[in-house]
Length: 374
Ligand SMILES: CC(C)(COP(=O)(O)OP(=O)(O)OC[C@H]1O[C@@H](n2cnc3c(N)ncnc32)[C@H](O)[C@@H]1OP(=O)(O)O)[C@@H](O)C(=O)NCCC(=O)NCCS
Image (tube, rainbow, N blue to C red; front, side, top):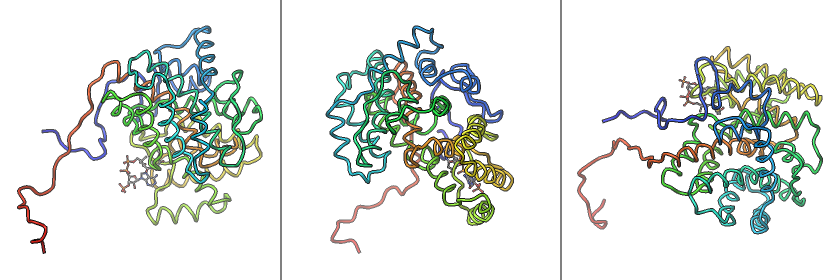
């Protein structure tokens, strides 16, 4: 009999060649390449190729992937009609979850679980998810969705579809680096959900719908939004100490801190902190960086927990002009690559994922007919 481990902490549920996390040393590696190197030198499309194919692309292979992504960005009319029918008050993650589930019904290969069809669906979903997020954002503001552009990369095209303006190249590159940093992260909760769904041989869209539903929670992808709400509530650097000391005294969780695996600084936070500083300075909004730094000083000293990926993502996305409740959908625009890569890895060597529960309830009770119950 195996022992019960709450939250499956430390339990190994798969062998994977996708990403390696050293929680003690604070390292993250995708398919052998250190995240800092990828964030400095690579692009999101190149990282997508790497995660899906196991090696970096040649120039021709990268161009081909970019072309395929660009060709698949536009949403089928029926799917757009569904988006138009959503209440404008819907949470964007709920809209995304529902739209991705609905996208299956417009995908000619939806029910084909072969590796080849699943690879094509990985590209289609990666192309479509940013379009869904941007289209819903515009619809809820009472504006018409903007058609994607084939000549822009994933990050620049997202900003274009949200605002209608071709973005400043430095801002587009910042979002591209954010997408690189969040593309995969071992057996996190949403990836596990995708693999469990795939383990039953359900299709790619079902797996990704499970993953999006799981990412939504504030203990996972929802933390970036919560972290920004905290920064906005604090509002000024001189208000940080009071707020954080009170929050810690009341045993509240500080969103964007702590991690199941990292016992030191999350290597993605190192890059994002630097990006936050540079972008906040560039956009004339240094207070968000200053507030973040002071929160970090207090929380690391008092609680010995470190910022995770979501903490500095908050100020980065905010100064890039992303609405706060689109932060978690932004996470999904990146993690779709990791989820789909895990689905492909699961499919290539599948076995149903079916753990057990330790039953701790009563046994051998006597059934009492309803009229005789007191
Ligand atoms: C990420 C997270 C869910 C990991 O949780 P976990 O591995 O189950 O760790 P636990 O919830 O058991 O926490 C361990 C201890 O650290 C404390 N802790 C963990 N994260 C904390 C936080 N963000 N703020 C304050 N205290 C925190 C817990 O209260 C607990 O303390 P205790 O032992 O005195 O009760 C948790 O750190 C968290 O809730 N962070 C905030 C949400 C977040 O940023 N999520 C994004 C993750 S990338």
